[in-house]
Structure formats: C-alpha cells, structure tokens
Image (cartoon, rainbow, N blue to C red; front, side):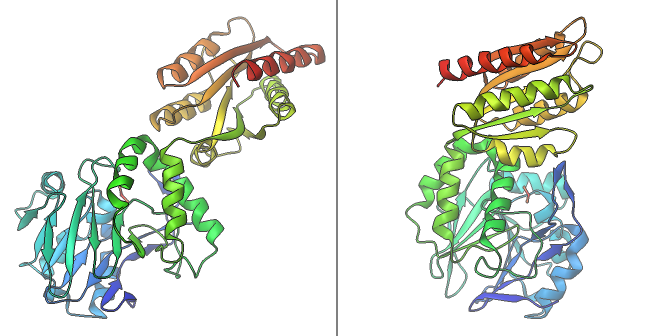
Length: 390
Ligand code: FEO
C-alpha cells in the first residue's frame, strides 16, 4: 500500500472500500474511498482519516512516507466516522499530535470517542503556519453536518473539501484525468442528490465564500480528486444547489395488477407530447438512491401507487420519505393510482408531497382496471395540467 503524491510533499494516504455497496441506504454500486492527505512540512499534518476498518491501510500508506509517530497535526474536517474512524489509532501512535477541528467538531469528536485529546478548535478565517505552507480554515456548517469545515492551502492552491465535491467511487486512479469523466460526474451528481441536496442553501453560501480563492485542485474525501475539471464540478454544484431543473418529468410508480402501471405510461405519453424528456421508473426495478440522481434536474415528479389496505404501497411510502427528506425545491407533482373501493392512498401521497414542499398540480385515480378510453382521457387531462402549470 503506497501513498500517492498529489503535489510535491503532499500525499494521498486514504483507504479504498472496494466492497461497499450500501452507505446508510444509498446504493454504492462502485464502492467508495475515504481520502486522507499527508502534508510533509516543518509540522507534519494529516488531513482527515478513514473508516476504522481501513485504519491499517492508511497507516501503511503513511508509513511508506514517514514514521506516523512524527505527525504533529491532525485536521478533522468532519466528525462522521468514515473520516474520523482512524483518529483514535493515529493518536495512539502519535500521542502528542494536536487535533484541529471546528468547535462543533470538538464537541462531536468528544461525543463519539469520549477522549480528552489535545483539541485546538478553529474558526473561519483562522490561519495556521506549518512551515513553508499555511492552512486556512473555512467552516462549512450543515454541508452536511454542523461540524463540517474545509481547509485551503494557498501556496499549493489546494482545497481539502471533505465530503463536498465527492463521489462514492472506488478506483486505483486518483485524478479526474485518469478516469472517465462522465462516470465521475454521474457519481458526483448521485452524491449531491443523496447527501448534499437538503443543504443547498448552505452550499450556495459556501460557493460564494470560495469564489475568491484560486483553486487548482479539490482534494475531497470520497472518490476522484478534481484537478483538470475544477470549473466543471464547481459549476455543477452551482446548478444543483440552485435547484435548477429542466423540461424533464419522472413518472415513478409501483403496481399490483398493472393498472397503476398503465396509468404511468399514459402520464409519460402526456409529458412526451408536450416536449418533455421523461423517465419511467418502477420502484420494483430502480433503487430509490438511483431515482434521486434523476430527481436532481427534473421539474415534474409524478408518483403512482395502488391502494393496499387503505394505504399506499410500502415501496412508495419508503420512496416519499426519502424524497421529501432530501428536500428538492421548485418541483411540481401529479399523484396517481388505481383503487378498488377506497382511494385513500392518493390523499396520503399528496399530503406527504405537499408537506415536503412540492406543488401537487393534480391527482388522478381509476377504479380497478383502466380501459383504453380511461387512459386516453387521463392523458388528455394530464396534458391540460402540464399546460396550466407551464
Ligand atoms: Fe463522508 Fe459525512 O461523511
């Protein structure tokens, strides 16, 4: 396990999680990495660590450069255990190291590990000289925990951004000019949609505070490091944080006897007739975290479920809980479904969406099985709804 030099005397010493497939409900088909960085200067500085399970991998990489007991500073940009999990082990090896973190980082680390380490809390604007280089700290609360911060190294024009600008992507390649850019961008989009989206207002503020920095490299804490495509990922974050959508409609549904599925097809046809790009997404065949990746630029989110025991199907309840928790804004919706004798699921779904900030433009229900004329008239009503809300 060798370290990878990212700039002179600055090394990637993280861990690669090749087998990770589920990150608290987020399907991580490509695995992930936990990126930690070692800066060799008068003060040897480690920026973030890795998940506890990969501690030895990180220590081996550090040891390929220096004796880890020589570490003077450990920067903890984020308390979450995928980045702080190896701090206890490193502090066993380097017991005199100072742990630099935000004030909320200090309390969070105490609450996670219960240790009296040598904490040095920093604020936005704090500078720390480590020899030839200086660390500038910028607190980034709620992107995506209260404790988050980033570190800027002006002499190298590197931003150590922690979770921001990351992707869940395991690879032996480290840089964005070594790996297919479309896959990196797709994984960055999925990461934003499933983790960062609820904090888009805070992201907008942080993008403003970063705009005066000259950033040549974004050394994030998950996936590929941005080097050749920094402007592209910054621009993508501006778009996603602004909840900017396109003429795109998602029709997301589950079905029991294909009646709700037939309705979904008619609703899709209505959007296509009005010039929309569409995706038809069955909850039996698509993971909710992959659907969220498509939500990011869709202006209409239509959801359909038949009635089961007077409620929506559990798959739809799960999706709506996830969707509304991630708080996309400026989206319109149509709620639809078939029913037998009591279409209570329609009201239940509409309420969840309205409580989550969606504009429910219309509701559509059909008893038992739709006949061709029912589907034609459904399509025509949905066309009217689209026109009325354009
Ligand atoms: Fe990658 Fe919020 O931890």
